[in-house]
Length: 303
Ligand code: MN
Image (cartoon, rainbow, N blue to C red; front, top):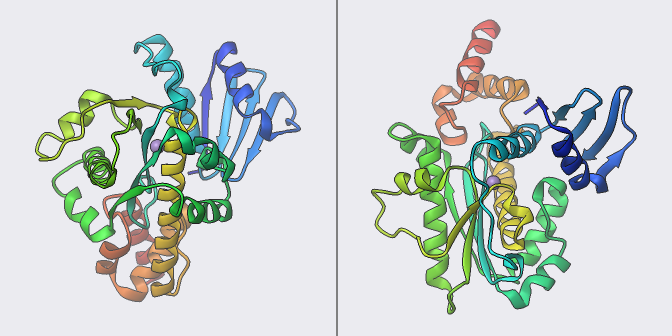
């Protein structure tokens, strides 16, 4: 949530500007480029500092922060030539940074003969789409490609969180979605691409106590939504489901649950504690986030 500033080399700035060119708006003073998207505004200053603002700020900034680190320290993981035209299962998760609502992973299979059709439906990086677009495209994807979700609803999430990290929970959910989807398919995909949230070795270490571990032809990459449309499709399906769950939770509580983990979230959490008691958070929120303590403090002030 909010605000992120990173410093980029001239080459990296150029790369960033190219990739957001479609969303360019007039830059403010002392800036050479500005892009406006539904969930993030990006400004490249003459100093080389790049500011990310909005709901997707952290996520967007991490991509570029990551890519710099990658260039200097970690050997770049490249996919085989022509990968974007292969028959691929993509997987991605949503809700990791949101205090309210579940953690959702979706895995989606796009065989090569359906790549053009899926793109035709408007599938692209979900961060560039509005919630309304996402719900509409997800509805079309639902009847177009096979997919599988793995959802950690808040009670389950909070229970698992007592004994494991969020990274491990995320890995387990990805693996569950992937293995269930593979069982549903009549054909074997050429590859599986996971939008990278952990190093490959760490991912498999997290799965060490699982029984059905998906290992064959698995690739990991950051910014994978741009590398194969299957990951973009998975991301849209996960996000649409997350949005619907948030609406459901909001309806039962009689309050609109905000996304992210910012000050607004603390306010709403405090209101809900006063109305329903702190125990209720277990059903609707990721209680280990700092927001719980902040909301409790707000309650003290209101009492
Ligand atoms: Mn992701």
